[in-house]
Image 1 (cartoon, rainbow over the protein chains, first blue to last red):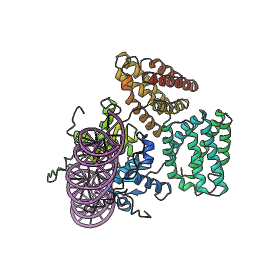
Image 2 (cartoon, rainbow over the protein chains, first blue to last red; image 1 turned 120 degrees about the vertical axis):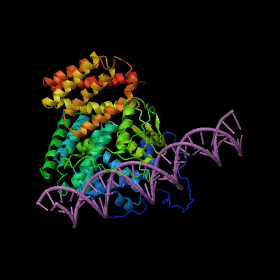
Image 3 (tube, rainbow over the protein chains, first blue to last red; image 1 turned 90 degrees about the horizontal axis):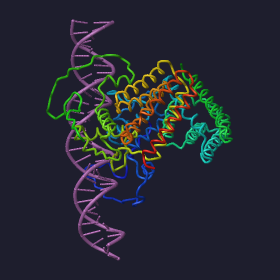
Image 4 (cartoon, helix red, strand yellow; image 1 turned 60 degrees about the horizontal axis):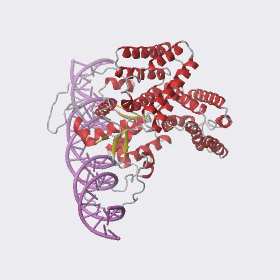
Length: 252
Length: 252
DNA sequence: AATCTTAGGATTGTTGAACAATCCGGGATT
DNA sequence: AATCCCGGATTGTTCAACAATCCTAAGATT
């Protein structure tokens, strides 16, 4: 909406018929034979559709695209300088992450969570996070949780609300990461991304996350001490309180 | 692969240039104003891409497409009589469900679970299912669990291995459904769909599911009696045993 | 013989344009 | 006022083309 991205394509130009730019530098030698697809994605140039999706995800996370807003194919297509078909693929990606909702024949809209969705999201979080912390984890993973706590403290000291929010997300992602499960990691990432759509209303309250700092620390200490049951209970209480607060900030 | 589906499109023909079939029957009046998108999908004709995805999902579930097999865009495009672009959208859908893996510039392949994936999937199931059953549920939801148990018994009596397998899936879906969470339901559905890709090797063993019947019944009885903690432990043990067995059937 | 290089074909990634189907709003009609 | 109808806008889908990439198989080099 705000800034046009004239150069969004990959190496090649607009594939304009006639325009011959024979600069085939062939960058990147035959490095590695069998990379896992995940690792490959980080090396190989991601597809244009992926980059469009990433851009939209970013705008979503920054609150440039408010919930309920409509995303018109042609508009985004022009704005980002890509084909309408590619935008379409990006939409499919975002829709599968629930960041966007498709209304057949009517278009895609930025997802907006209703009261029921809030409870739903917190149910998922309770199930996964509490189970994860009750299972404990390797020292390295526990150290990562501690690191997230410190990150939050540093952000609070610097009065950086933005960093505080992301630190909080790191904390919860680190907890799920205890389980060492790729699938749970992505599920958690999606759920947090969904919630981020919401928080731009709540985050105006400067003290919103600050109150959680002490909780995070206490949970982390219990985890480090091997008191997994207690850590689980603390985390559960935390999530319940958070949901309550979320519902209070939001109507209904 | 086996059967060509010549008529896969919706109401209109191939949109052949020149062919003017002005039969605008305008079926379906202005029924309902604000249907939830989920409910809408069941009413409105799903998109062609969705139907292609559904068809592939079916072939996947039936074991027609073995893990590791390659899905060529042009082939499926011709076989189903749809555009390559549409096939592409269907692929995106399946990829988001992990039923299929995209290798950039190389094509999409039927997902194949390695030993690590098996553990991963079972981790997800342990987290979600056990949490769900420990939370209990409404009488109606509990009755649904009981119904799934009975369904399995009936299938066993009829010596219908196929039905036995689906009944078992119903059982576990019913357990997750106790939580009344749309998101958890879809997560569980995806995980089960992933596992189904696998079971076509294991299911040859006629006694595979049969041994689980008694377990399911015992778990259900505990649930009905309100012994949630015990039900959770039983279910956990069940899942652990199942994973073990799965690993035994499979190499490594 | 083993390896490096090169060409060729096949498939994916992306584009642009076209058209059908559908939805939305605003007049015209009753 | 309620209903019908029509025209504009947007989505859904197709088609054809081309660039980029990968795979294989010869062919050349050591």
